[in-house]
Length: 524
Image (cartoon, rainbow, N blue to C red; front, side):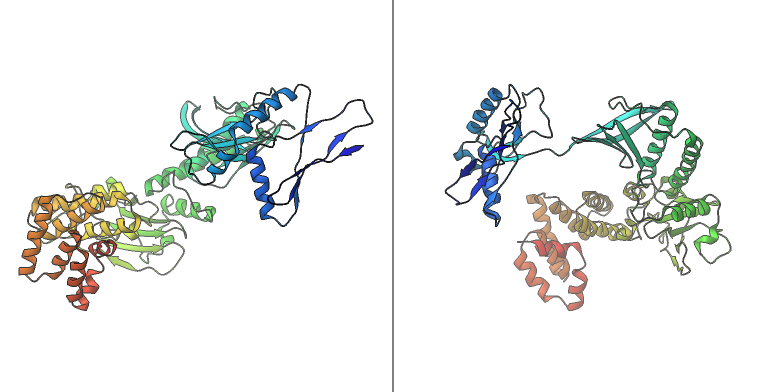
């Protein structure tokens, strides 16, 4: 075998890029030619890698040239070289370019291989001139799909992802069922993962059952049939598992665990699912460790079924209901006071907690969630913000109740921690409805103006004049905290600081707990 070595020398840096040997097979008449397109992007990449390494040379592979390749390759080299002129390549290093354009090099070849091919990425800045950014290769190609499939006369939306590689492809269904196919072996493996959500797991069980019965899957845009999977002997087992998960989903729906709820990766499913069946189907309430012979009155039960699943439920009329449900709102609205009981399933320490009276002096209706901390509620697996919001509707809550303003401050505070606009909208709604009943309430006005500023609205001239008037009245009544709030809302930070410094330590400490103080801290 006779060898020739080609070396390409660069002046800066004074290192050399060594190219893999060209070979001529002297045992046959045929001579073998190899090639590699070294467009400016590739050269820049090689030199950058060489400069950052301690080596004095770098090697890379050439591809074997086939008959008829020479003219297309020559055309491709000239085209890519023109597109990646030295000036534009250097400019692209210092210029932001969005959006991006992808070019597949030499794609016109009949035997073009996406995974062996070279891809050049060009940025397109505001001036519209394409700038070369990077040369890349594809290892895998991902395509996400949603498809409605029909199984047993029922339509089901299934989400799946197809991951293509040079060797084969993988289909991941509902992030739970994996179908891994090898192109060369023309066979595949099926793997059912742990439960991620009950709904997704049920879909995958039904898909497996469909495949067992028909030797194909019900997809239209993804044809998977004639595989080597042999589960005929497991048909009864799969169908029994489907029935057990149907029952589990029904019970979980009743207690507020959505079939779309994503369980923690570390969840002990046998223990959790057995607890759910035993407590809520078989009514083995002794497992709750509530230290009473039986449940008789309407109570709110806070249950920790596992380290990761915590539920807030209502026990009424002999069964448990999801606290975050319309039915629970109707039931709890019938009682003037309800006991709130904490229960750690599998533990012995339980302390009953009395809720504040659900009706005030003149028989006001108050949201069952008005006295519950939102930071604690969101930890409930069955938490539903829409139900919390509904609980403050006139049907379930008298807007004139003192807890209206207290609750609104909780939601403003929680917005500051989460930046979830839903909580700010609820707080605004509560204060505006309260103002409709009490138009002169200055605390509610301050809250409304604060929320508007948090929503990036500028206060109108009339609203600013209203704040000046509130401040004047507050000064006359020596209400320094109201004066402070007005200066903050008018964005007079220095004046607000002077007022804050005059407050007693206890007043300062109390004020620092309110959302208005955090807004003051963020003022420029």
